[in-house]
Image 1 (tube, rainbow, N blue to C red):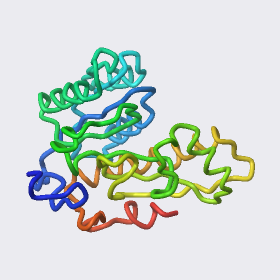
Image 2: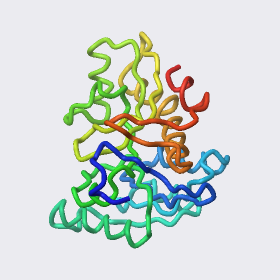
Image 3: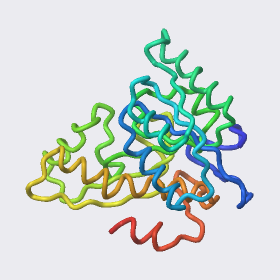
Image 4: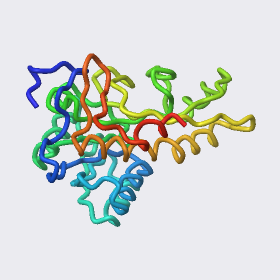
Length: 240
C-alpha cells in the first residue's frame, strides 16, 4: 500500500486480494498476553484461517506473553524499551524488526509503548488495536488500565464494552472495525467489569477483526470502516 495514495483514515485496500494467501501478522505485547491468547486460540480452532501468526514482539523481556508464544510455537522477539535512549530510536528498532520479518499486519495486544510516526507511515491502515470502551467514549489519554472502568462506573454507565479499530497517530482514535457491548452490573467493581469486558467482548472482537482483515473484507472511506459481505457474527452479534 502506497502511503501517498491514502490518508491515515482512508484506506481503499487493507488486505491481500489473493484469498489463498495468508497475511503475515505480528502481535506486539508488553505484559501477560491475554489478547494474544485469544488470537492463538482462534488460530487453533480455525477462526482466522487466512492469518499467519508470524511473530510476537515484546517491549518487555519478562512479559508472560512470550511464554504463550513459545507454547504455541510462534517465534518471539524482544525489543527492550529500556535499552534505547529515546522513543524515536526504539520505534525505529521495532519498525526494522517488522520489516525484517516481512510483516503485513500489526496487532497491538497490550503493547504499552507509544508507536512512532515512521511505524504509522509504513503500516498506516494495517495496525489493529482494541480499547475496553465503546469508542469514542472514554478515550482520554490519561485513562488506562483500571482507570477506564473506574471512570465508567463513576459516570454511572449502564453499557460498556470493547472496540477493535485501526490505530492512528492520535492515541485511542481511529476507524472502528467492530464493537461489542457488555452490560454493567449493579455490583460491578472496576476489576470485575474490566475482566468481563476482556472475556466477553475484547477477546471476541479482536480475532474477528483480524479474520475480516486477512480475508480482505475491510475497507475504510471517510474514516468509516466498511465490511464486505457482512455475516451474522461480524455485524448483528457485535452489538448484542
